[in-house]
Image 1: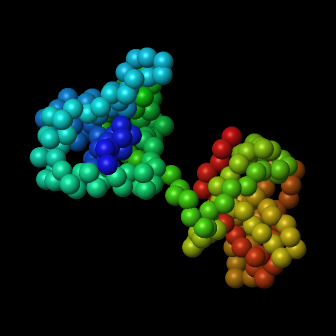
Image 2 (image 1 turned 30 degrees about the vertical axis):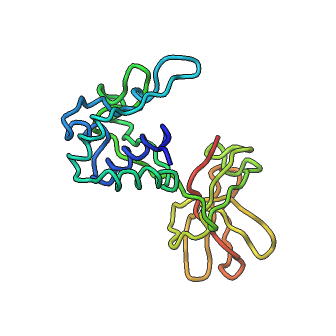
Length: 211
């Protein structure tokens, strides 16, 4: 089956992650220009933007540089859609320095790591925030992704708690004991609340919020 434009580029990104380096570093290792695999190079001008494909030479060079066979690369490309999505990650202090963004505001350079986005699974769910007890951190209408399978919840974690009384609460863990969990609100108008562990059906950590 032919590989799509998205599969080829995701496979290159996946190969870089497998080597523990950025796509820019992978290009340099293969003797290519460091910007060869930048996101800004993957589409050309036009409306809609015109896809740009990696050249046969560039693919041959990265395979030689990493010792990967063509068949293994093809398997990586076909598997790309099943891999967890990631986005480039950079510290805020670094983001204020030169060399990490191109003229279009897209990430470039070697300082970027990767943030893995949550993969769909049975333990994940999304909830819409109602009320203002967690404002301004979470506003009414925001959507949060909750991991019910989080094995360890610690003080300071933002969580969603489902109680035996039928309540579903988005709070911050203020204290934990063997018998109770103290839940705090960001909004000072709402006092902390201690909930007995026997009254908690489940407690999941909040992973992401969409505002």
